[in-house]
Length: 196
Image (tube, rainbow, N blue to C red; front, side, top):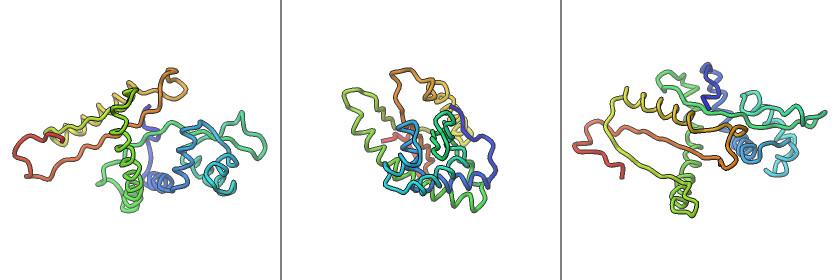
């Protein structure tokens, strides 16, 4: 489960952020993630769009290598699609072009809305009967180098314990994991951060 697109130029990343920032494309990706596969007709019906519109956006998602055609199911003009495994770490903002940064910022605002709802759900399900949801908050002191090393270890843990859909054990479920590590402004802490 490593980064789906490890080598990308700034222009390619900008196009990716713009594609992921399109609300309909995000809905298409979510549908494919939940249901495994679909064609433009199925998506049009389920998402309340025309098949021409969904077909166009499917092609755009394929150009970004976020989905792929299922050749064994496709025949003639009926093309079936599935989502590809994907994760992406946004590069250091200092290394981004202004256009890339603007596209990444717009995408981040959409993600915040989704993650806020996910955060609420995690707290609601934390004491649920199955006990799957896990909620943790921590505070500590780190150097920038410590934080970068910590994030590398975090990604390695996801690779170690995560599975691709086709390789996952039968009892596995999709799990959405979010990690935010945010330094406090300089000079505002005299004691220990508690992560309340």
